[in-house]
Length: 90
Image (cartoon, rainbow, N blue to C red; front, side):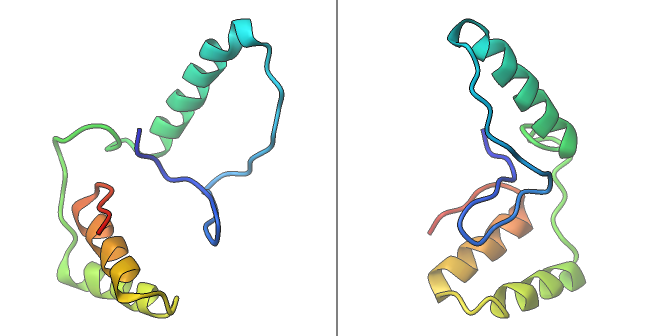
């Protein structure tokens, strides 16, 4: 499942915490988590209604990515991911 997530140098669009969950209810809790993450982005997981960015939006994203001073490979992957709305790894 591709979703916005935090990680090294990234911040998830929501606050997170760690909770130990009993194994018998783990699947139910994971379902709730997945439903919440999908509710954040209504286009997540659907290939229909995918809209490419306008040139101005792409330029703004490119400038933001360039200011992060990452390698060209990482930067281009981020830009393509933003433009096409799906995770692209180069």
